[in-house]
Length: 341
Image (tube, rainbow, N blue to C red):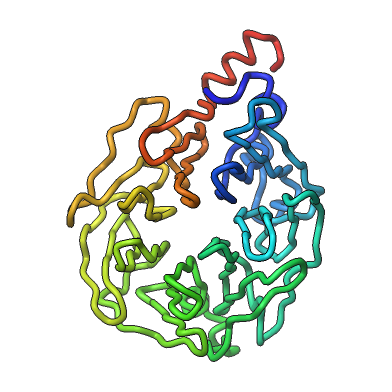
């Protein structure tokens, strides 16, 4: 394992990983939350659950782990990298509160503004770095990107604004909640929402494109092979672009893929149930050593590396092999033996 028992105890002990992001090959970010408080919390008490941002520096021989504890009031926190005019990791909660770290400074920023014209129209569902730029998507057709400190550009453009009828209808409002976004370029973006809703942006306007399913869509990846891959309910996977789509795999799991990424010239998909990769047109489960396999849950890929982490640990793939950062169970057992629990 790449971190010591003491480093684990200092940053991760008693907490569980909820989101991850690679800023670059030298800095991995983790959003974590208190396990005991999480088990007791209701949706309305989420802001009282203790949360942290943890930075892991895989190529640093000394100060490899650092963390920031957030004050109460934060909702669920997502993490994402930003390399546009800066070198930052952003921790952003569903309400748009922002904490930035890296590049020699760290601290709270202004909330992302919310209005019918954006940048935000509703709760945040995902943040993601695309070509070094951080994008944010969420409810009520929210889309924006970061241009710098306290500088958020709305990409809501001509996307429909929810009517009073849609606001009062859970199903209709769900169809306007963007779950994920990815892109080949700023003028070639794809976002997914609700029941089979796929939108494309050419940089000036959005267009709803034809999609052959009304399954719930959860994740999207604009891959290095020129295709767009979309993860739907139950671990179902589609491939296509523009108005031409094919179902590659019909899933039968109770969970969708949390993340789909392109790394080492292939597609990777994960959920709490494991890790899969695409072999030709077939989705195959990746057989991993047990210490690595338990780290399934979330994926992030950038700068030639892929990070995988979940409730039971974290590991990364450097393009050739896996390296274990930590196994949660083994670290907790070691901490007990050392008498630090």
